[in-house]
Length: 251
Length: 299
Image 1 (cartoon, rainbow over the protein chains, first blue to last red):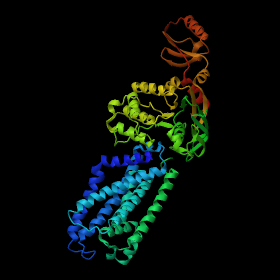
Image 2: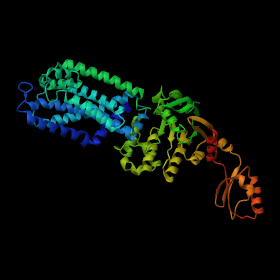
Image 3: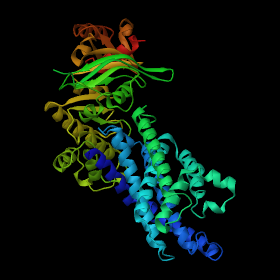
Image 4: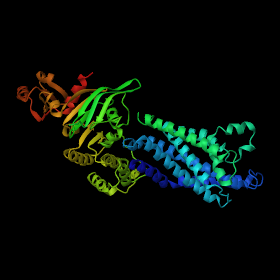
C-alpha cells in the first residue's frame, strides 16, 4: 500500500513542481476560450431556454479541461520517464501492476479535478451557472478523468517518442473532445452528426456533467453514467492486462 | 542454505538474437560474485531478467528462493540494482529521490539509513540539490544509494564504475565491501578486470549468451601457468629468445616464462649476447590473461 501511495505522491509532487505548465497554463487556455466564444456568441445563441450562452459554455469548458489534463498527466509522465530512463526505478520496485495503474490514474484524476476547479472558479467572473445536482458533477468529473487517465497510461506506454504521443493527443483526444458538445448541444447538429456524436464517449461525460449544473441534458444522465462507467471498466481491464503483460515496459 | 541467486537454463531471444542460451548460474549467500564478458555477451540481459526488467523466454531465476516472475514482489524486495545507464528523475532533489525510492519499497521512516548511505557515498552536502545540477559522478553515487535504501540482501551492480573517478570508485568499493562483510551478497559486472580480480571471490564469464567459465578467482588465475618478464635492453634481444616474446616496444620486450627458474636462463642468454639489462619487471598472470584465453578458446 505504501508503494502505491509513494508513486501517487511522486506523481502529484511532479505536478506541483511544474505548476505553471500543469495547472495554470490549462486554466488560462480555458479562460481564453470562454472569453472569445462568449464574446462572439453570447448575443446569438441560446442553447437551453433562459440560460445565457456563457453559462452554458462554462461546464463544457470545465469538463474539457478536466479530461484533457487527466490524459496529459499520465501520458506525459510515463513517456518522459521512459525516454529519460528513470521509469527503471519504478520497475525495479515491488510495485504490483494494479498499484502502478491506480497511482497513475488517481494522480491524473487529482490533476484533472484541480484544473477543472481552477477553471470553474475563474469562470465565475464571467457567469454563474446554477448547481442543480452537485453529485452528478462530481461523479462525471471523477469517472471521466479516471477514464482519460487510464487512456493516458496506455498512450504513454505505447508511444516511443513524443511525436507519437502528440499524434494520439491531437488526432484522437482533441477531436473527440471538441466534437463532444463542449460548445453546443448536439440537438443543434444535423441528424448524421447527431448520430455520430452518440459513438463518442466524451459526449456522454460532457452531457452528464452539464446536467449536474442545469438539470437539463441531451441524454438521460443515467444512460450517460452507464456508458461512461462501462467505458471505464473496459479501459481499466485493457490497461491492467497491458501492464500485466509487461508490454513495452519489461522487454 | 538457499542460493542468493539461482539461474536455471535461462533463455532469452531478441528477434533472431539468442541473447541468453541456456545459462545456469548459482550465487551463494554472502559471495562477492563477478559476471564478466565482452560487450553483447548477455551480462546486462541476465541482470535485467534477474531484476524483472525483462521476462525470460525459458528457464527460471530465483532470488533467495523467490521466483522473479511468479513471486516478483518478494524477489524485488530482496534485490538492490544499480543500473548501467546514468538515469535520474529531474524533478527531485537527492533526498527526495531517496525518500521516494524507500517508499516504493514500503519503507516509511528511513531517514536514518538514508543519511548513513549518503554519508558513505559523500552525498551529504548534496542532499537538497536537484538531481539535474549534479555532475555525472555524483549522479552515479545517487544511483548506488537508491539501490541500497531498502538494505537489500542481494546487491546487483551493473558496470557501476563506468566513467567514474578514482576517488568515488574507492569510497564506493569500501562501502560495498563493508556491506559484503556484513553478509550482503554482491553480484558485479564490470569491464575493469583488475576490479573483479581484487573484489570477487568467484567469477563467471559469459560469451554469446553462454557461461564459458565459472570458478573461484584463485582457480581461474592458476589456469595460467608461469609468469611474464618485461626487459628493457641496451640493444636487440638475442634471436634465441624471440619465440618467447609476447609484445615489443623499441628495445622493451615482454616475454612469457614457463616458470620463475626460466628467468635465470633468459638473463644468462642476454648476458652471453653482450647485452645489458637496463630495466626489469616481473609480472604475475592476471585476470586479463585468463579472460583473453577463455574468450579466445570459447568460439
